[in-house]
Image (cartoon, rainbow, N blue to C red; front, side):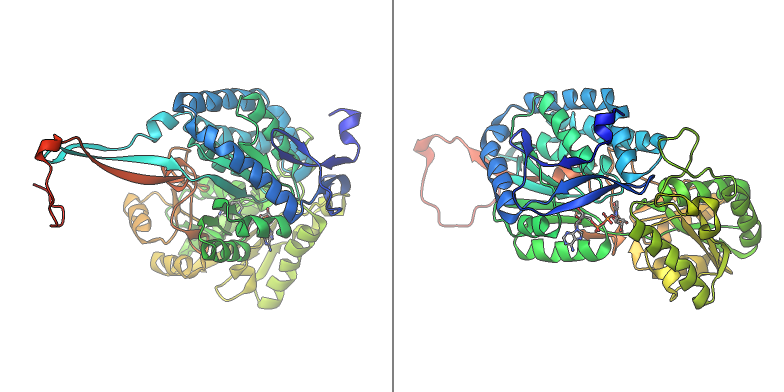
Length: 503
Ligand code: NAD
């Protein structure tokens, strides 16, 4: 990174193919989580500035929806190449504002690229159905048309991948887009906007509005915003779903998670421990698909805890930019302190804190670091079990039987992901049948679906009907029109007041 880039910078919005400065006078600090120092100031858009971005997107819509599918696909192919060519730069931006390690950030970009690749197939994805001779001389067919201006509101933990879950499919389908990224790590959105421009997408088709609740509220109220994709915490997801649906918009609002990993006594304990540690502490536990609770059945608990502790002690924690580190800091000081407070809560609730991350030497460093923690004997009803902690804290719940373990998992308010570790195919198949979660892993701890399936949880992890990206993403960003057509000889025409029937 150059000296120029390490200076405190101003992060603007992006409207009509160029940076757009705000006159609101409201800003937020963007931190470097590894040093604990401010990195820049992000300008918060006013409601009027949101209106200007939506107006720009609305003005770009008629021409973009009329652009041939091959032209829109071509832009997605170009975007894929540009993001791929700039993947390291994007990853550096992620690491500098989010804190995750550079290799983890590279993984995030790679998973985002998958979504662009999926959208390159838009001519095939938008094929409708055609029924010849549905009735005598009558053909019926369906077409999928874009909605208009659609908005995406995204969380801090995947500043590249989550926007890429949304906007490539949305704009490939012919919509125009307004992205409201997290104010905690907003710079990646601007770099992506520049790449979208370079890919040949016309100005106004993709816009970025920086801001906070004021910008979000205006997007939810704006009559020209036809659909809202949201990813973030459950209370905000619920309220966004309620407000936007009340305002007549289509909404998919993905919320928080508490992903459970069930370990049966027959599992390979070493493999289960590798998976639990990787999935709990990767990205400092700030992943919506992180494993945050292991439910160990019968004799699995004690050997698993030993194996997990052994692996935790070896995790290298430090700045994400430094080679060799496996876990970086948390996003902000406040969030780090909130996560750490759960260790006292757990003790007060009667759970056993086996490893307290506050005692790790890294916790004394500058920056928002916290060591990894392990809490045994967490139980439903405890806050340290029920709440989404969203940090490097792994809970262990103990169950006597498979059935009791499934009851624990299904009793939890969240249903994003769940995993089972076992060597028993019958048990795994039963788990697939029983578990109330949208994404399930069998000996796979973080079952994030590949881009040609769709991503979404159940229960309080998703409000709305359609999951994100993949085939359901295409359905979300289009509406279907069914046409019934005939070309009769006018000489055969007559008045008929009966209800049309198939003949
Ligand atoms: P968050 O809910 O605080 O913020 C998400 C977005 O909403 C941001 O753009 C933010 O500016 C905006 N926002 C925040 N409060 C708002 C309010 N009161 N009104 C309107 N807008 C508001 O989430 P976060 O802390 O950025 O991200 C972490 C959360 O996201 C975790 O709960 C995590 O589980 C969840 N998440 C879920 C998924 C998923 O796929 N289900 C994926 C990633 C993250």
